[in-house]
Image (cartoon, rainbow, N blue to C red):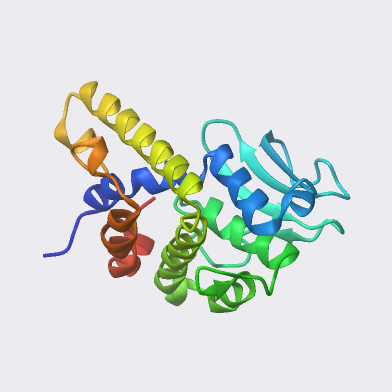
Length: 220
């Protein structure tokens, strides 16, 4: 039986929050791109347009509470998942993840992490509505690769689990304030201590990959 858009959205919320967390993005920049290169990228929320801070590599969130992530190169070349037709325009799914793939492909295209490279991930993204589903699967692959790489460090694994458990608690608090079951988000796990990288890789991200086409078609 096919899942509804509400059911899919409830299952994805943890990843949307995790993927757009500043500390997570900064950890990716620092540990994958390296400290010097990571500091070369400006991370900015609330940007009014892609032209802000022109002449600098920048990962921008255009908007306030609701908005869209884009990546801009030093020469101001703009990588926008809507314009590139990697994502259905107007949806708020994985623009933060697409922007991070564009960013890494620009600054460390051939560096391997988690069994792939940013350039390979970028090449896997295809334009057009018929490819929106396969592009969501690329996002799942991206996060699997990032977590496998960062998880090689016990210290980073501990930190990642702390971040994930914090998100789980925020989802739990959100659900307490919901009047209807349909407004609730799915927890990563019922008990915070049950959250492991193995669970994330083999259950939660596997769900995203398995339902990629449905997610692309119905989740806004």
